[in-house]
Image (cartoon, rainbow, N blue to C red; front, side):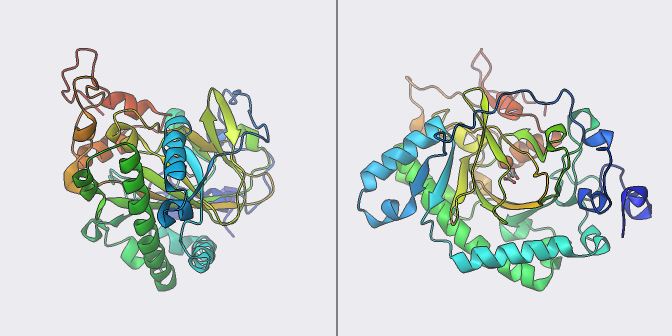
Length: 368
Ligand SMILES: O=C(O)CCC(=O)C(=O)O
Ligand SMILES: [Fe+2]
């Protein structure tokens, strides 16, 4: 079994920044290796009052017509004030959620050599594939992840999704179809709540989508590490399936970190930077992070939904008028995604780069 001693052996020498935390914890850990220790230890207070539960949105109410206006109003205010919610009655079948859990667990149980076939390749600007990622200051997250573009199909990298074990691939294909439908419905509802023109909703068809399946091994001193560095997502929306029901997600709200409790049969949905831009700042992407569990592994599957590739990133034209000038630049999706991945994950810093300068020229001065 590979352990700390051979973590940097031949299998890993393609890049010292890519090795597996899952392998590391296969041997007892006396002290957390320095490259995982975050200093200073995050000191933001926990605001975990039991009453501070994430809002819940009921998809049934949004599709059945009954209580539609009330629920749409709730969706709108939640996207403005929270940027995160639990989605119940979402329509994704429980059997597919269970199957995805089983298959992703199976992927992480594969021998390391098998997973390494999918390793992140040097020079991949979007860091697609299997591995860990170096964050600012040379520190690493306490997690192994597999990140992959799944839509449009021609953007799939041949050595990644098509090469996955067939049962995982087929299960993910079914999951993708269901979450695509759900994502489109949700985005159209948000667009309606924002009072955007119907025509603009076409950009939600056949959008750019990616998946991240993440394995957070147990950590004997979770307070010293980060499962995932505080960040906001670059997407329009993200649909999160907390595969094995283990808590760990925290969101940054009103200056405090709130733990999100797992809600059975719910999916967690969050507003990403792209939707903050698209809604011209009406909806807010929210910083979040993951704290690993001291005893148990945690697995999650995040599905990132963006608009159609050709549409680009910028405020929706129907929301712009003399009273509401554009707050963000317009760039191509390619430029946006490359810019996002070319810098180290750091809270909402990338969104700042997209803001129109004080001189309001709307030019893309983004050097990222
Ligand atoms: O694992 C989680 O709960 C969150 C993952 C996440 O934030 C991400 O993949 O962007
Ligand atoms: Fe995220």
